Length: 416
Image (tube, rainbow, N blue to C red):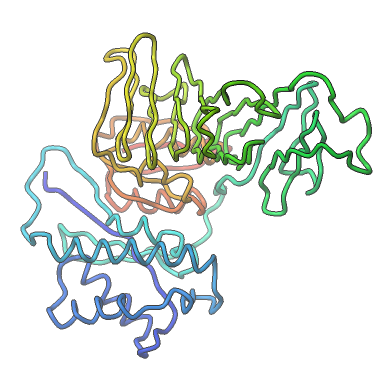
């Protein structure tokens, strides 16, 4: 069976060199598909080189997002263009397993797709481009968002997505605040705060709080030491309201991305399913869902030590520790860190993933049960925005002609 591939593209507003949206879209499609002439390649590369992040406009004519996110996206696109220049134009070999590819450059700019009128797909096997309009689907399921429940040390539960911003409670010398952006912050503050009742104050020993995200939820927390944690759907983080001991230790279930504040005299430890991640100051991702076969710790920056029983691993940036029942703790070198943190960057990222793995991710994010009827042997590679209704994900997957889906009573049914 021949390898089939298709790609996502996007549209921008008018460029300062007066290139129309249609012309720009067509050139980018041809460039990424390897069909562009030398002159067209030069035009695309010159456009990227001269493009200014602050000139980014979407189809609505208004700037969306921040200049920083636009800059990161453009940098990633330029890197992809450089890779394309060095790649061979040879055709992909025939494979017995059908692998569906949609260009990974889409990962860098996938959020832009949300503001364009059409998602484009390119099939290299047929050299035909088709378009899928962003239309409404009956019974569609919307993506998740900032949803979480905070459980205080005294057992009180606060629904964070419905509570107002401002001070939620004071525990010991820590003020718990919901920020305007939807994040939760633990701010050390020994002073009393007017308007907060004594019932909310805990003056005894350090209390432990737990923040839990449901399926279809995510949340960002700033811990008392300044460390930041992003929780994916169906996850939890248990942590003290103040780090007073020799170590800073938290417990995680599900998936979380950490940016740890450096404190050499007080190491940070993440406990997850009998495994300990030891850090001083670093950026890393932990994925440990109950329904996933492997626990993964992926390092982006700094250094961490993974301890599981009597076995230890030291990770360097770009490496990953994997723990499974059959093989124990393993070190994986040269992993794709973009894939590990794609969820934090509002993307689904697939790399030769089977339909079961993909549906587990969709189930968590869209808070929907999934039933797979029949055998679907295809493997999928590519990235799709998480900020779209579930029907848009299946519009991409259905372009392969290999799967079908329907939504009934909030349940997704997938079949060949």
